[in-house]
Length: 303
Image 1 (cartoon, rainbow, N blue to C red):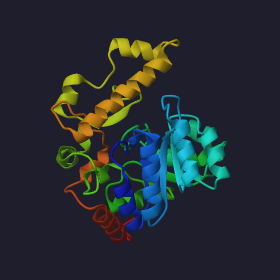
Image 2: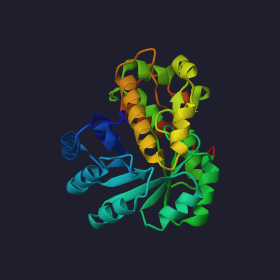
Image 3: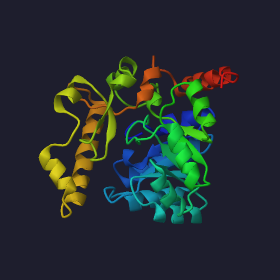
Image 4: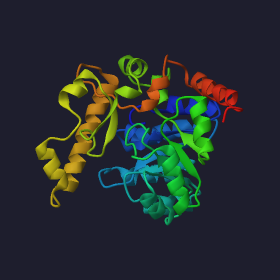
């Protein structure tokens, strides 16, 4: 999760018996990123991963990938771009690569590059969500790929975890409920928003990165709207300017999210997914995982 996942959360996740991943873009410099990887290597009690944005908007990709290769992280998650080089270079080092996909078209294209699995980003995911339900997306991906499928989006309870596995996923990727944890570095206001707002308050905006992204529909978001203005829209569709426009939109949007995550004002824009529906209190990571798995066991004879 951009700006949310950190070394502390990830280390606690491994102690709780699950794995965690951190977006490389959470770190401003290569030195900061490498220091984080060193800390994880020393303290994590299980595998951990790194999220890499694979498209040209990420001007730090080369350095980020090299750091991951140098530290031999356990796995990489790619999104928003062609992961060919990432897959090739990581496999040479024995590093697993999982690729975010939102439909069978991209699932088939990515599968041809031979990653280790697909992450099925459904319409209940936080951040850059897909358009299909988890059940439909998993079914479509299985029709074009034999790779393992991890379902991303719509899990906040043990029952929902069991549901995704029943739909054919081999595991799940879960993010938004972890925003409101003790180890999360974001502001108290951001965490409280995840408690006080619900799934009905999640809306899509194109203002942050140019790609539809889920945010909490606060009064400020309602005031500013969720669509790019005419000038921004024109630039993003113009063949000559669209690459530069998308890069500038992404940069501006990420700065906005960073400001909101740590310094809350009436202009805060908080990224989250519908699974905040099930967030009722701020908990340690280990307690959240314990509760999820306990609920999962309780539903054994329900599905």
